[in-house]
Image (cartoon, rainbow, N blue to C red; front, side, top):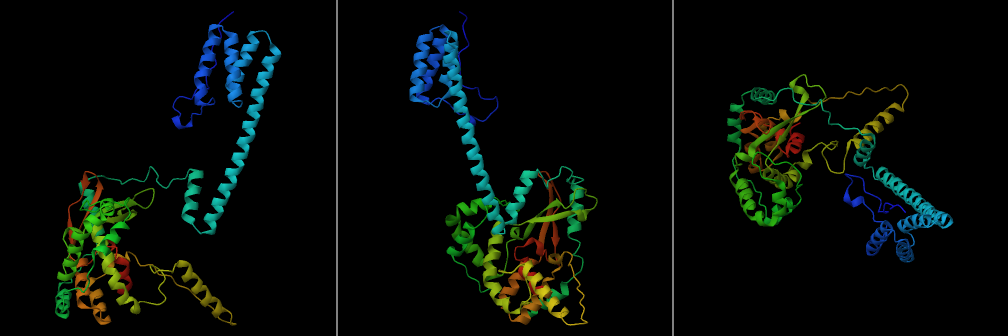
Length: 409
């Protein structure tokens, strides 16, 4: 009688994650199953059969003991009982297949409900992510790369992004200083205000030139709230902004797959996270003062309004006008190129003075938007020289740029 190879558990594919391996025999019977295999290998047929029957009694849905029993009965010359054991294995397999089909149908129904809910909630971002995942579409093409990673090219990009700072407004700023009589900004924040703003930070966002990570401010919000409260209140009181908080690190991001000119690289400015918090605290006091002067038909960058509201209002006006016989309509759309970069702080300050905004607020805004610095960063070891923006604000660098732009236009 030849020695048969013992029946082991189904081997796991090499490289497969450990979490996917499923033991078909319960853990407390695995040792008994192994001993039955050894007995079969030694030729102890009766002992192996007894052990298999005991495993079947305790775990009737495990296929391994039936498989070994079929080999044992075949070895003993009992083909009928061997076929019966294989039939039991087939029956268990059919039950597993039936259960698998039921689970697949259940998961399909759950996924359908999930997709329908995304459309019902108008969550198009998640819908698009699902489509990209299923289709394999990726917006990060390997051909999208910066054509040259050098110090000279970084300097050229830096001057290109600073092309709006060409005019000299020294006289305008001198006249503005004579109009501002009070330099103290009546903004006082508490430790609770600062702590709440820190706790709302997104820890996955990138740090600015000061290398202060937002996750540090978020996780240590209570501990750091006091010192930053002192700094913020001192800035509002004196009308001065720390130099490093006025610096921006510009990261060029390709707009298209083939980069043929500098305008094909979109500048993404990284600013100091503590300064972003300071701006939010300032805007909480500033926005209510300018809200009555904003255009009532402004839809973008306003709460509870969107582009759909603007389209509906436009269509309503057009349809009402075209209902009358003989009427016609023409629509013209304008796009302001680099609108945030063209804000002139002295013009913005003049408008705020005419609105009756306290001079302390205006002085702080002018100090923040002028005399900024920036540099372009192409990689960990490739960056440009620092240049100064003296006469025109780099409004794109600040999170308050939207509010200032709405007042400026």
